[in-house]
Length: 270
Length: 96
Ligand SMILES: Nc1ncnc2c1ncn2[C@@H]1O[C@H](COP(=O)(O)OP(=O)(O)O)[C@@H](O)[C@H]1O
Ligand SMILES: [Mg+2]
Image 1 (spheres, rainbow over the protein chains, first blue to last red):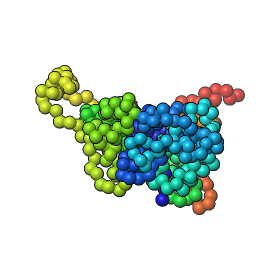
Image 2 (image 1 turned 30 degrees about the vertical axis):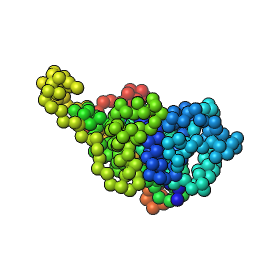
Image 3 (image 1 turned 90 degrees about the vertical axis):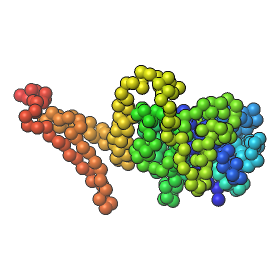
Image 4 (image 1 turned 180 degrees about the vertical axis):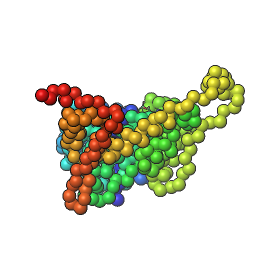
């Protein structure tokens, strides 16, 4: 059985691509066969985060338009044998993706025996985002603890409940998970950032994980190595936990409590 | 955190304000979804009509579409202002 997972948010810049890359790597590391697809037509990004930008020959739109085979367009990851990337097209034609085209490619991946297909959604609620979520079995809604991101996430939850194939066919809701990213426990403790419990309460869905704000994310994207591969980085560890939870394991939440500072550190600043 | 912040009593966080605002907006937007698209316009036009007679606040109109069996019912409620604070509606002056 192939499971299609959309990583979505409404708002841009919240960490969808960072999340898609780390989830894909994390699942492949467990031996699963994984394809990760960049749906952001015109703003290709995932290839950079995955570190395979120089190996992009054909893209998603090329396959949909029959200019190459799926096999030719899938880029095999250099680190993990069971991981494949499908890059977004750089075309400016936003209509290059079609529902039929996307459906055909997802179908071919399923036939090929992929366990997971991760769809990295573009921002917004227009065509690209709509198509990225349409065929999903599960959705990971990436949200920052900040008003506009939370509000946008709620819009997305509404769309997941109505504008997906599952919803239209009455096959039961797309399974929804919340992933809080760029979380700063210190600022939550200081009362300046909404906490996990607040966001969970407002949106009313289960929390898959909390990814702390971490310098490791920038380092990772500079190097083209998904942050989950950096075992020293708190964000990498938090993503590894989230992957474990996604596959049904129980993992306690880490990185949600502020570090206790000594009196001297508090007085002289960090 | 420097010496000054440490000595200053901790400011009341802005996060609780954010949470409160979001609770309200999310509840409102969830209630709205699934309603017919013409409701906002209907509400505006009703407001104009009613204001010819009584000067009500935009928040005083509540419109809902309820499903009863396989029929949809438009529910409309308008809270009139307290007698004491009613202003003469502007339209009244135009009467002959
Ligand atoms: N946990 C994190 N800590 C620090 N920076 C982060 C974190 N997650 C994402 N970022 C940064 O936020 C920016 C947007 O991330 P990205 O994954 O591209 O978002 P999206 O795909 O939603 O637009 C990037 O610069 C990324 O490095
Ligand atoms: Mg992105």
